[in-house]
Structures are given as C-alpha cells and as structure tokens.
Image (cartoon, rainbow, N blue to C red):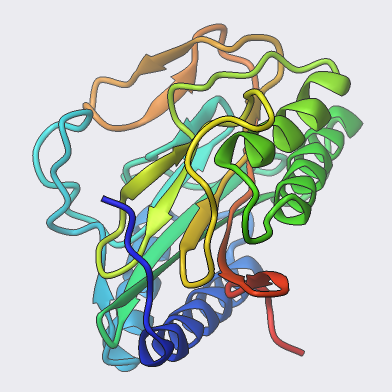
Length: 257
C-alpha cells in the first residue's frame, strides 16, 4: 500500500524528520575513537524517550531479520552496510561508521542515515565513497516531483553510483514511509526512467543510496541482521526522508540551521 499523508500528518512528519536529524547530528559529534556501539544505542534510546517518540526498530521483525531487532539504531561499521545490530564493539581510529535511524513521532515515521570516518581518515577512498552516496541522494531528491515515476528516482541515483564506478545492489533500497516504517513503493538504487508508481503530493519516501567498494553482493552476519559486503570491502550509506509537495521534494530529515 502507498500511503498519502493528510496536511496534519505532513506537519507531524516534519516534526519526526527534525527529531531524527537532531539525534543523528548529536551522535555524529559524540561518536569518537573508543565509543562502544552499545553506548550509541543507549544514547539513541535516551533521546527518543526524552522526545516522547517511539522507536521503529526495537520490536521490528521482518522476514529478512532474525526475530525482533531489539535495539534503537542500526550501527554498521566498515564492511557492514545495512541493518548493523549494535553489539559490544569499541570504535577504532579510522573506522567507517554508518548510523541509520527511524523514529515515529505523533504517529508518523521519518528515516535517515549518515556515514562518517571516526578519527584519522586512512584512505581518501572512504571519504570519496561517502561523498558519492550523498551525491546520489541529492540526485534522487532532485528527481522527485508530482507526476514523476519511482523509476526516475532510481535512475537518477543509479546514474551517479554507476558513473563513479560502483556496482549497484537493488535488493535493498529506499521505500515509502508514513504511519509505519517500511511501505510501498520500493525505490531501488538503480532503474529505468518512466517506470513504476507515479508520485503524488502527500507521499513520503525514504531514499537511501548505499554502496560497497568493490562488489554488489551481500552476506548476512551471524547475528541474523547485519548485512556486510561479500568481499569484506568498506561501505557507505546515506538517507533522507522526503515529502512530495506540489513543488517537488521537501527534505524532512535535513539538519536545521
């Protein structure tokens, strides 16, 4: 089902987006060499509870995971790219960390992800890979307008990723959000323009380009959740939730000035 938000629901979506952006910005400044992934999860829980919001992850148990996720944020490090299950790991100098957060506030969900290197940057390839996912995200957002098709977004994202030499996995990608976290339509990170569902004002989409340095193949970690590159290569992930308006895309999870 593709859900179209009412005007009051869109107002609540903006609040959800602002909260997710604020939490991720705070975590970005707090995560340093020596931070435990379980501390990141605890800080996230505190922020969600303080805001009177609800986690979209704790009780989440989709077919591709092993039972309820049981944590408040996805923490993916180095070769992990998606659904990273927080565990007792201390972030090391040069680690590439991706944080993915979805929260419901006022009954409406927002979803966003950031990637960054902690401490010293060991390879310019890491920062280039992060920058490419951000460029692809911007291209996808630029393709959002009423009457466009989901395939237009996918093509815009994929063109940037492929143009930079990355292989694109289309199994996991963007998706609709609304009163629940994962909804139709699926927004693959590559596709054909003019294909797929037509966009209309009131739809909310979480767009999330992600890449692995030298492969498009994923493997699932022993925890049943964390998805890693099949080759052990480094990874990056960027995501924003956007609302489709009569004028185009309104980015709900952008950091406010």
